[in-house]
Length: 348
Image (cartoon, rainbow, N blue to C red; front, top):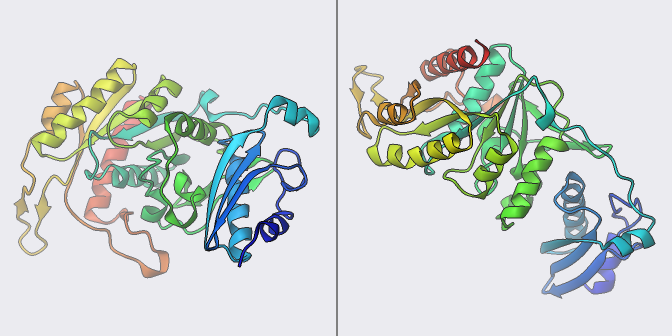
């Protein structure tokens, strides 16, 4: 049975990432609650919403589960300035930020509603651009509904070295997702300001290296995270994903309107689930109707970059990536044409 003494004893090995001392030694633990081996802690550190906090919470969860905890709940808050001074203070470092890069094109992929295949378009656009010789990164900015690591078959996690996060690389694409920093697929319950801070850290605390393109898989709609991206990236390009259905296109127009109001350049519309093509007869069935992508592109004064049919990639059990199309797959060839159009529009 876990006790407060056992919890503190287990945590003596966990180091405060900013003070380089045990979190027990520097009295970082504000509160401990234990009920039936379910542990809840409140911890005070120098900077919340950082790469260091994410690494710390992973360590704490692992240590406490090894000590017998069935589940671990963590809440973080900032140490006061007085407390920081008492503990020796924190050296201030100015980390380079991708936001200041003049050589990287940011492309936000968004939609008006969920379930239209926005993340599928994001990961296949990213991997296809990489196949075409571009240096590409992707941020899974859909913080509540992160799915990029699973879709790309990513099994490892980023490394943190010298206070910098090194993204995982898959299919030539550097990948960062909130999913890397959540234990056991737990739900994210952070509020808007904290989410914005986390997203900013994905730009400033990740060692991206040189990138030609950074793809951002945004949450659907026009909520806090989407607004933060529009504020952080005033020169971002955008691709709007919709289905042919009139309602989906109507709702997607709201996301497009936000882009226009914040001076983002909409470089095109991708119409996903455009039709179903029979392998036997080659006949096309327009399951969700027709014309939604074209109407949306007309309303937003842009073009349809491509129409993607209903389908599924060939599954390779030895190199599992359930949503990535091979370049020789019929749908993979459509993504190649879309990526070439994107390059032409951005680099011309």
